Amino acid sequence: MGLTRLRGFQDLIGADARAVAFVEQCARTVAERYSINEIRIPLIERLELYQHSTGETSDVVEKQMYAFADRDEGQTTLALRPEGTPGVVRAYIDAGLDRSDPEQRYYYYGPMFRRERPQKGRFRQFNQFGVEIFGRADAACDAELVIMVDEFRRELGLELEFEVNSLGDATCRPAFREALLEWGRAHLEQLCEDCHQRLERNPLRLLDCKTDAKLTATAPSSADYLCEPCRRHFGTVEELLSKANVPYVVNPRLVRGLDYYTRTTFEAISKAVGAQSAVVAGGRYDGLVEALGGAAVAGTGFAIGVERIAIALEADRFKREGAPDAAIIAMGEPATVSAMELARALRTAKLRVEMLSPERGLKALLRRADKQGAHFALIIGENELTQGVVQVRDLKNSAQQSLPHGEIARHLLAALRR
Ligand code: HAM
Image (cartoon, rainbow, N blue to C red; front, side, top):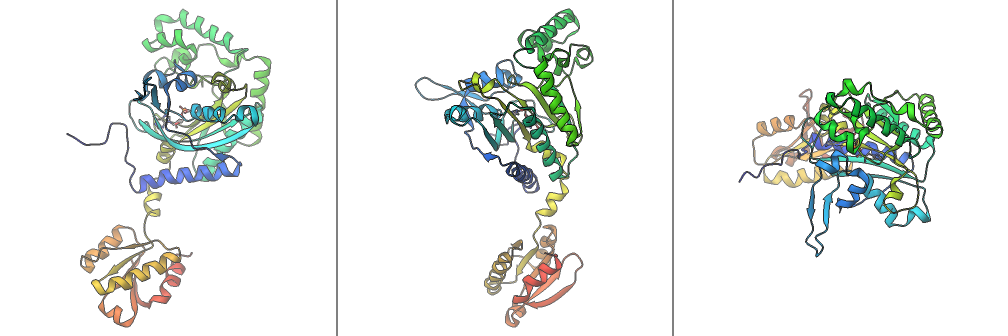
């Protein structure tokens, strides 16, 4: 039996795990600045929750769910969450907040599961950092979310381009849908297999077909069907983004693959990830809380694809950051006690310290320290032990000096400029 990793699932080791943790930390920092509270929700929910929100006509629910029957009497069908929004909405309704205190702001972080065809930037388990805002129907809230992603991008030092669109609402969407349906029927013979299906189930999805992109460029555009309130809403979003100097373009084909969106949708695109270039995506979902049994409360949010952002960042930087400031080499048993005391003192001074295995020769240990990227090797042998000193070797320039224990932390901090 090959007990290997499953296709589309990843082990994140060392620098790779560090990159993902860094993205998470940056997102938390920015979200806290916006005074958003954390929410932690289960990884497993009823399959129905996703059918009623993400949508039965979405690829996610139709083709990509990890669903299974529970062992309870009714054999409830459960699913690993493919995205965070439905669970957050469910939790918000469960807590009764939609009625008692509707204006709420949440962020979440954690793994999502979609049985997609794996490729660069597309995994079957991936992490999202998401934000959901309830009880704010105004355009300023949509703009603030895009601005927040822009701030996150700056924090990371990453180039991203923003695409925005408006899909209209329950008043104007039906006419747009009808126009697409009509257009689709008129071009049926030229459309691909998948689009034939999309046409009947959710004609909006015609617009994000990659195969028929050239043809669907001539299809009706949502902008031409917006009712006056939706047009005004989108106009305000655009105005606020321009004033905030967010680099965005309007993409009338941005319909998004999930069924709950209304009005504003947006994506942030990175050129560094390849085909899976949407690194952040979101939008407004004003009907969703009500559709899941709650009050009529507006909602809007986004989710960051954490691994995709990590791919877009320069990987080398995380290898460097993982390196110890000092590697301690104790030659022989008696030196170990002294070495451990030294390690403790240096860690108290907030230095990053690794103890090397005492079971190898000095040469091999110095090679190991260098390979780990350590700045210093601190060597304690028999002589050093009797003299109460440590050999401090700067591995960047091979300079070596002998220093008493008490001076090492200060010396290292000065050399590392901390
Ligand atoms: P989504 O576009 O399905 O939206 O996913 C958001 C982001 O998650 C994508 O832009 C991408 O970066 C990342 N992502 C999605 N699938 C994968 C995958 N298979 N592998 C790696 N990364 C992936 C949502 O999930 C909505 N819940 C966003 C939202 C929140 N809208 C409103 N609030």
